[in-house]
Image 1 (cartoon, rainbow, N blue to C red):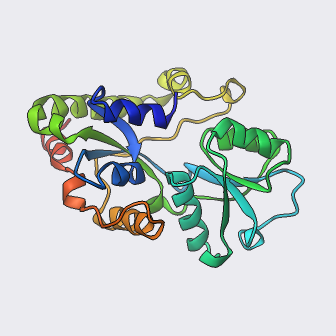
Image 2: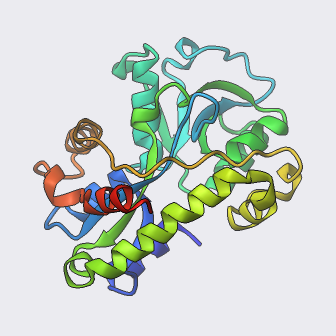
Length: 258
């Protein structure tokens, strides 16, 4: 039901792996290398955003520069806040002009925006697509900044060490599923909409984004997230890329043809 519940199950050792993000993985590994990223799961593309900063339809805000000093609703200390700050920075807004306010629940964040009680909010797709359909206005999204916006597949380090064959088979199946979907996306449209919990009102118009080919995040992408977490005081020392990203399953998938 939520990332918090997922992470609690992971902490308790009741999950072997999860779809997560780089910041969550950095925080998991702050004390010791608990999780290892084995693949990208989703990433923004030029034709498909993953996160968007939106404002109410009647807002006078029009551009990124208009957001200077404006409180933008996010979930603090999560990938949402990271993407918001990095996205605005890359679009030319100085860090000193970026303001955020904590609204952890995505449905509540969207409802408050729709009611005009928030000046701006960062929403993940497909909730951002729904907000736009209902009249919100897009200020900027991450479609041109794929390096800051991705989700990943990660497994517990002990699972990888003790059961590498199982992980390899899961990821081979994952790659085959992506290839199958890519070959005939219309066939799987309704299934993806259902499993992706796309709001019913978007069912007829929403295009499920293509999923990335087998790869892992780069060291530069990881380092940027670590730097942000250090700057926020979320971690006290850097978390090593080599302890947290494992590319052996990507290489195996490529070498065996999936």
